[in-house]
Length: 363
Image 1: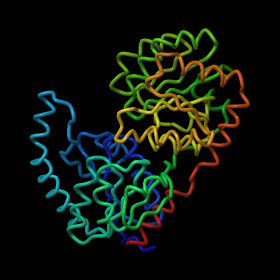
Image 2: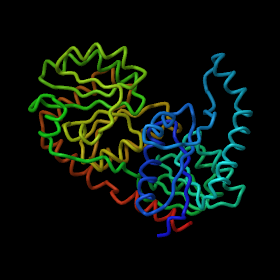
Image 3: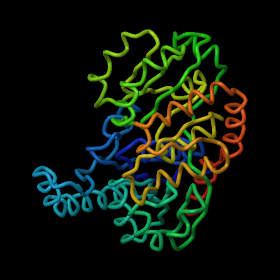
């Protein structure tokens, strides 16, 4: 393929929108395309992309704030100004790069570049991760050329050329042998191991729950690998004095930690579920109940209904439901093995290649 094909990928805010963008970019570059990023200076991409050696355009835009604090009201009043400024910056960036395709992967930094590309007559594609599409996807699905979804359920909310390919997986997500992964992490070789994952930013409800309940796990001989999030790390890091708790603000090598774990307890973000399936991990899912249209619960059911995971609503954490489910699973290891097999069946290992081919087809 000629190396003159140029693609801009816009998206971010959270890892769930950024990491698919990175996976698509890496695949496109392997196929000879040139790729540039657009994101928000308020999102995770503002640090992650420069650390990768990227030089992204970072827009001064953020989502509408839904609470009624003074700071949120002021931010919302500034939104029209930020939107117009970001639109102009995006349009100029797109024109200067002379790209063939603009790709949106979601988040508040993807909509403006997509609009600028549509207005300029440039080919566009959206990669939608969730079962209930985000507002950018819902509003623009009929205006872009292609929408690539991860869940069949998403197509019911959309119109246009909709293709269900699954979610892109980062190329550095490598599954290794459990014992060697634990030794690399310098943790107990033989203890039953739970990985707590609240998403790229951490989950305060999950963190608070395990802060209270971890003694029960330790008493039963468990060890816990715990990604608590950068914002919560200073508060929870003191717990790491317990040799059975391994607490991190953010984990770069997720494949290593998935490999070392017997069971994952996590939110039900779309990217996390794709990684669980790809790595064939048994999981207990605690969906974030305030996600748009409760889409994390819908995501979680897509695995739970197929026997690949167990769903525990956040409202049931205080009742001890999570601990009952976890301890029962470890009393019946064959149940964990069965969940692992069923998770693997749901994997879409070729999703990234299919999405990249769709982008090149547009170019």
